[in-house]
View 1 (spheres, helix red, strand yellow):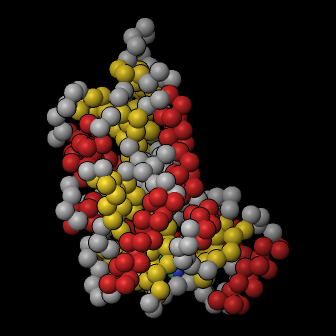
View 2 (spheres, rainbow, N blue to C red):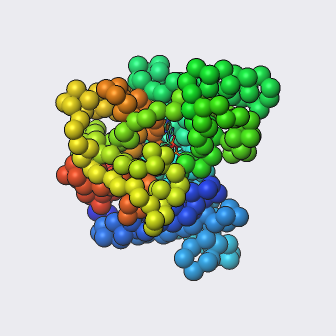
View 3 (tube, rainbow, N blue to C red):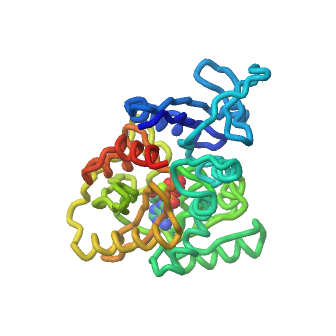
Length: 331
Ligand SMILES: Nc1ncnc2c1ncn2[C@@H]1O[C@H](COP(=O)(O)OP(=O)(O)O)[C@@H](O)[C@H]1O
Ligand SMILES: [Mg+2]
């Protein structure tokens, strides 16, 4: 491959900053092994500064040059490609993608519009319903007021336990279980602390099944469904990332019927095309009884050593390094 300057961005301003720093190690390892890739890794720190591994500050100018702050008169390095390895703001929210689009820099992953639509759990559900993809029963709130509270209480009366979620969050932050009969007011307040809209869903008793979807050899690939087996039945931040987690994962969920596998694959394909997903995403489903429901779409899935996306891709016979290489060399 002809030499390509690749900007690998990590960190970002969200509650998933630390997760991104773990994911980036894996991508860096994969990118470092690709001939022709000249890698520049930049962390967006919590104050929003762009810093390299030595702590030196940079900016990406509107002509696509990565320039150090103290590089007076020096044009910097023209970037050919960007990999936004950021979960949550500004990488999974479409913001950084908007900037890349503005300055004409090619990048890995979903475009700004799709990222934004999928990062909002309410918009995702509206799209899913419009595309004929079943999803969990829900209501959404735009205001934290008395009438919203009544709507939630009515929803609780109908469904029992509910899950209250900030609309724009990940890693289970701002996501709470409210049991039947429990006053939801303080939980709704907490969820509104994270995002302008709040989603309230019926609490399901599901198996958590997910697939990696990605573009490999120019073709859409949907992996065999994997499973998150979480004994507490609530895959919280701690269950996701702590050493003490009791959760296990498998890349081949057991005892799925061929109809269920087909349904999951059909739904994933419909969502990929209907929402114009690009390059890679992880799509998470719930299986309750015999019914498959969409839970959510992650447009920049975790790539930590315990993350499902690369494992399901490998189990599907494809290497993440080759996947990256294909996308970078196809520029
Ligand atoms: N409607 C629901 N019923 C039962 N459990 C749920 C429901 N919604 C979320 N959960 C639990 O909470 C976890 C996190 O919710 P999710 O919507 O996937 O948010 P995040 O984007 O933070 O991962 C899920 O993996 C699941 O264990
Ligand atoms: Mg999730």
